[in-house]
Image (cartoon, rainbow, N blue to C red; front, top):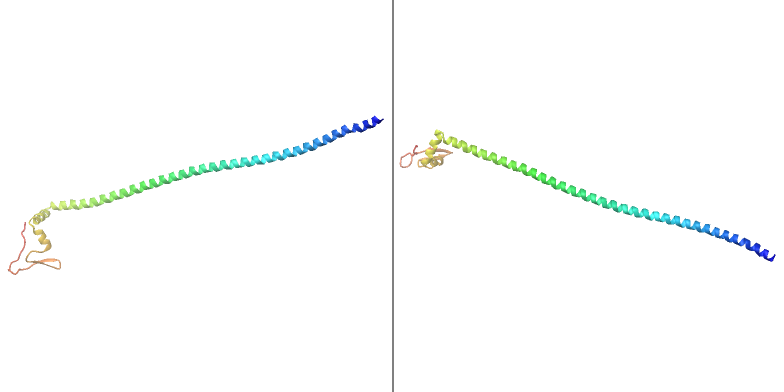
Length: 170
């Protein structure tokens, strides 16, 4: 009987230990699951931040590359445009200068051609012979003795010696 009393008392202990161990394991499992869940969420958040930072860096690098490509393209187009504009202006001004020079030269040549054509006429040959005698300058200046200019007209007059002077006709 004495043993039975102890047997009855001790029979409940393994069940109580089992129950306590089971409850402790359940609580431990719940705590471990909660800790694992929190750790997984923290890892996901850290991973999301790392992915976002990496994506941001990639986007910045890509946009910088694109910016430099566009900047280089714009600079090249600007230089090309200025070069073409300069060539266009040069060609236009060059041709304007050539045409102006051609026109001036043509006008000079036209006057010289007209003078040469007149020099070959009978009047031109007569004027040339008159110029060879030296009298053409005196006729234009009205500076021979017996001649005076009044109001742009050359008049003959009798000199103090009583003579009237003229010039030799060629």
